[in-house]
Image (cartoon, rainbow, N blue to C red):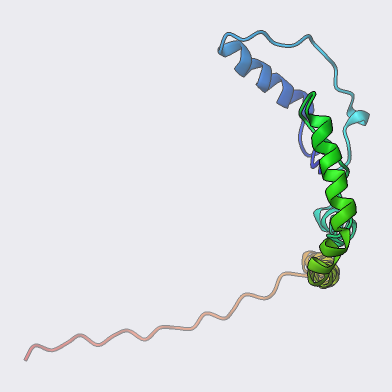
Length: 153
């Protein structure tokens, strides 16, 4: 997820990073220009997480096989592939309840996200209405009765 948007000044951030590198005696990078139009727009977290939940709701769908190991790594990939092929029925059976649960979580998140968006819209409308309304009249001043002095006993 990339949350960089126009809210974060990229040039200022790069300048501050390079200053910190120079203060520690580390060489900085070459000067580079960051175009304003090249900055990605801000990502709405609600829609991003909902999309992620939809993509990964089914735990029986395998992730791509890969390895970070060299040489022997290919044997590990082959072993993973063989395990998946021989045990997929067991994997599906074991994770069936998780798949149902993930679907409920995804649907609940979608409903909550819709409610949050509706409430945000309502708050903005109320703020706009409050800003355009005239200020309320000042409350009347209520006189305070003076206290009687206490008499010594």
